[in-house]
Amino acid sequence: TAVIELQDKKKTIKLLQLRNPWGHTEWTGAWSKDSPELDKYCGLIQDYIDSLPPDEQYDMEADDGTFFMDFEDWKDNFSTLFVNVDFPEKWTGVRF
View 1 (cartoon, rainbow, N blue to C red):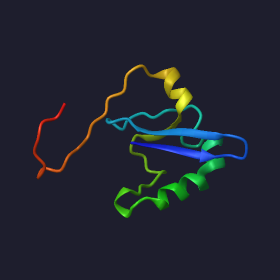
View 2: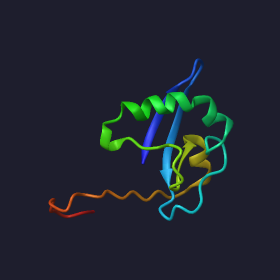
View 3: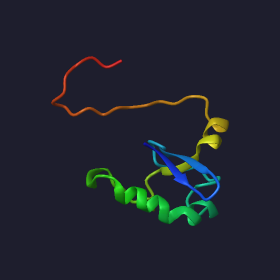
View 4: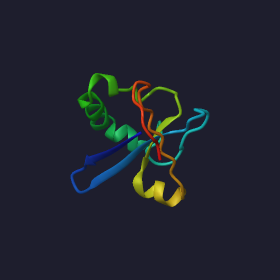
C-alpha cells in the first residue's frame, strides 16, 4: 500500500507497507510489529505518516493485517505481486 524510504546515518532503508487482505496474519520478521527495527525507527515512520494528506494517514499500530517489510526481505520471500486499484464509481473506462 506504500513505499517508504528512511534515511539512516549510514544508509537508505527501503520499506514496503503491505496488507494481507484477509487481515488474519502478518509478517513476523524484521520491521514487523514489536520488532526492534520498527521500535528504533517508529518516530521516522510516524513523521512520514503525518506528512501524508489527512485522507491517506493511518494508524500504524492498528491490527488490520497491515505490516512493514524491508524491500530485500520482500524480494526473498515473494515471487508474485497483485495490485488492485480501486477507482471511484463515477469513473468509467476499461481496466487492464
